[in-house]
Image (cartoon, rainbow, N blue to C red; front, top):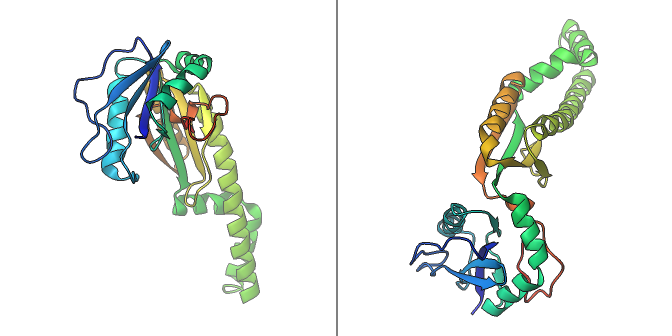
Length: 252
């Protein structure tokens, strides 16, 4: 049977509560596999597993429980190995890599920050700061609204100015957040967000980081920020050496 992997810890990591359940319905029993100085938190992998809310929460709950006892390298939802032997084999072969990452991420948490524009506020900002746009808007006003071509030109200029503002705000936001974090991982672009950043933060400095986010909200009222966390540091678990697909534990 395939083995579902939640995370990797040191072999000395405290035991999990007896009878703890993980993904699947009924919930599969969580257990620990050890190899050398490492341990993997696993369960049997249910067939046809999909990212349903119940299983996503179960995955998160297992990691939260395990993380309460010390540093854990979190695997992303859906990380499955061929069997228990494949898991312990990878632990042994990648021991140096996993031990280094456990040390580097000890006491660290992740926050994800997504940013978008408040449409009314950013439009006001662009109109107030772009003199060329101001000049054409004023010329159109004095001309009773301007011709179709003039209105089209103004619209195109406003769209271009908004895109430039998005790019500038994305760079500035990353710069400001980097100052309050230990590392940053830029997430994939997606519709609706001008920035998608994952920040690695020392657990003891979480309040400092969140205060920095609030300061950005105050100083950049045209930005809407959505913060998710604290999370296990998923974005900072780097893959180890390449392994055959049927034995590798996916850490990406």
